Length: 444
Figure 1 (cartoon, rainbow, N blue to C red):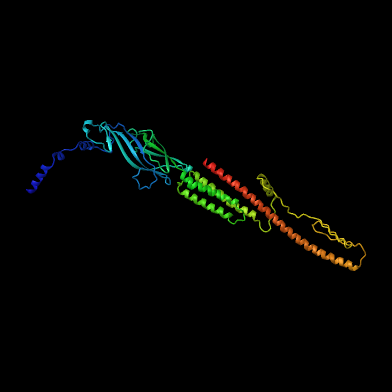
Figure 2 (figure 1 turned 180 degrees about the vertical axis):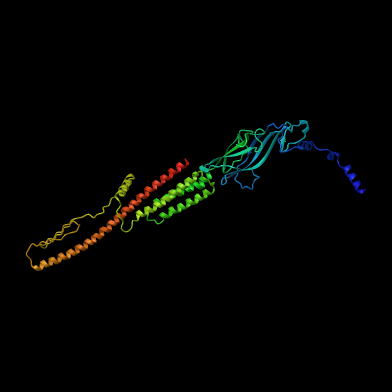
C-alpha cells in the first residue's frame, strides 16, 4: 500500500504537459521519418528525376600532418600524388515526399538538414576527402596543378538522379593564404558520361582546384646553392696546375651537387613520363662539373709532360697562338736552337795563327800553319797540342750538347705549360657559356 501511495503522489505532482504532450518538432520528425526508407529515392513516381545541386567551399591550404583533421586544410601529398581536402560540402535537393504546410512548423528551429515547406533540402557539412591528383612536376618548383574532385552517383543513372553543379565557380571567399601554395581558381563543370556497360548517361559535378607552388623557398635554398656550386666547380680552371687542390675542388663540388640532387629526388614523385626542370638543371650541372673535372686531368697532363717531353705539335702551337691573338695576349716565341757565332783567336806574339772557324756541327776546328822552319821539337809540341785541343774540343762538344738538350727540354716544358694555361682559360669560358645557355634554355 505504501508503494501505491508513492506512485499516486508522483503522478499528481508531475506537470501534465511534460508527460502527455509532444513538441511540434518532435511530432514533425516522427511524422517525416515514420515509414521513411533512406535507400529509396524521395519521389512519388518512379519516373520523377531527383536533381542534386552540389557546391563546395574551400577554406584554407595548410601543410599539416594527416592527424590534424580538425583544421580546414588542403594538404598536398606530392610524393604519392594525392590531395587531401577539408572543405564544406553544400548539397541541395528537392523532395516531393516531404511537402508540408507552413503553419505546421511555426516554432521549429533550423536543423542540420534544412527542409523547407516546399520540399527543398539543403545539407551543409564539412568533410575531409582523400582523392588522387595526377601531378605534372615537369616545371618543379614553378609547377601548377589542377586537381579534380568528382561527385556523382554510381547507383542511379541520369534518368533517376541528376547531379549538377550549383555555380560555375567554387566558393573561395573565406580562403586563407598558404605558405606553400597559391590558390588560382576553382572551376565547376558538369559532365555526362556514357559507359560501355550501360546506355544511360551518368552525370557528375567536377570541381577543378587550380594551385601553384610558391618557388621562393626552392629558389633560395636549392637552385641558388646549386648554381653557385656549379660555378665554383668551373673555377678549377682558374687555379694554377701547380696547385695540388685543383682536382680536389672539382670532385668536392661534384659530390655536393649529387647530394643536392638526391635531396630534390626525395620530394618528387617517382615517375618516368618526364624529367622535372630542376632535375634537368641538376643533371646539366653535374655533367658539366664532372666533365670539367675529367678535363682538368687532361690539363694537368699537358702541364706536366714528364722529364723528357716531346715538342708541342704544330697544329696545337698554331691554335694556341690564334687564341692568344683573339684575346690580345702577348705572344713570345722562344727559339729552340742556340745561335751560332764565329770566334777567331789569333796569337800575335808568335808566328802560329790559330784560326777557329765553325764547322757544320757548331764546333771549332783548330788548324796550325807554320811560317818558319823551326825544329822538329816544336813540330812535335804542336802535334801534342793538337791532340790536347781535340780532346778538349770533344769534351766541350759533349758539354754543349748536354746544355743544349737541357735548354731544349726547358723550352719545350715551358711551351707545354703555356699551352695548358691557354687551354685552361679557354675551357673556363666554354663551360661557363654552356652552363649559362643550359640554364636559360631549361627555365626559359
